Image (cartoon, rainbow, N blue to C red; front, side):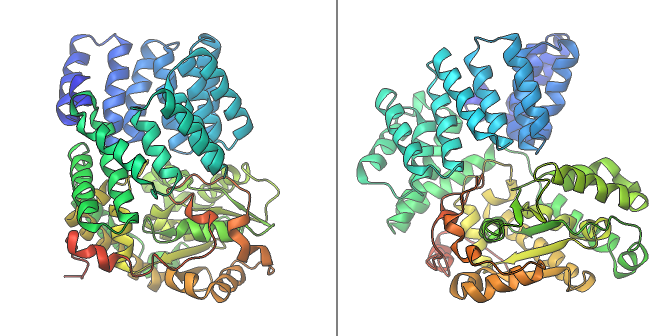
Length: 492
């Protein structure tokens, strides 16, 4: 695990696989493999190894907690809560078990229970990260001042706790005073005591903080290094995504969309908000979720998991796929007239979404390409958006995305497919918002213009921004940053 702490995840993974071969019945080794696989392959990678560990020892609490955390990240929150609860029952005095139960409950939007779990965890353990988990939950609930106060208290006790420094910066939208920036600079100099993950966090936080002060040269020294470090720790090949796009264009031809258009689920409950990360998807969801008939479900992994489960036989089971989706989504808000699924990368699945749910609305968020890509580049995502950490890969991914969206425009019916421009949303908010509400076949409600006052949990990287009144300061900002990050967004 030393290699993992140093960020040498590929080397660490090679070594842990050797250890598995030598001791194939030791669940602890599989748990270590799960941790490393999580860095390289995301939640799916973790699940592979935690399942193996639990097959050997079904009561291994460490494996249970990692498994539950990965389930929550993939949107299987109820399963995560159940498994975390079992871990707590096995080790009721384990503070980490209670904190992971809190994380699962927060992912399931059961925030009151989550806060109680975190408080119980704090009574059992002095681990400062528990307070950081709780502060993140408070932020998601919109309790920004309480979260910041709690983080300040943690840092007064543990001034070198990088996870607290990072969330403190995040909670303030990286608009920090000189004292907080200096503290992060000092922590960054302590290279011998820093883990790889903490170094990445500090570089991103400092870069974003200097951006907020318009000190671009220093900001991009940190941000370029942050992205280079992060990219070095993950496995990704952009050619795979490029190939997927080409396959989708061939698979979902106009003929296919016409031939398979009849055998599907007729529910009109789902609204899908898709687009590149940082293109305005969270803002659109927040506006829609401010309507009393709409529930904003956040970023659900249901479509991807359904597509993977049905595989090549998907066209034969479109109705079943759509009904399964509606069943899972409706369980989150059974009384809602519309449910918003704001998973940006569902743009890969727009064709499948329309075939299995032809009455569902699909909203594509568009934003200036440079603003979109550079906003992604300066963000450290919790989820694995591997293409955002290298300018060339980011450019190639964007070009593939643009090519796929051009295809969807030709095969999706306009009455079910709407494109909304971020710039119009910010500069002409009422007109754009009315267009959104009309498209979703909903009566107008003035609360949609007061989206920033809506009391609902938000779990994305934009959770602080969507609680502010509409602003235009992000429009065109990427042009200022472009000299520091080489992008090639023109189609060849």
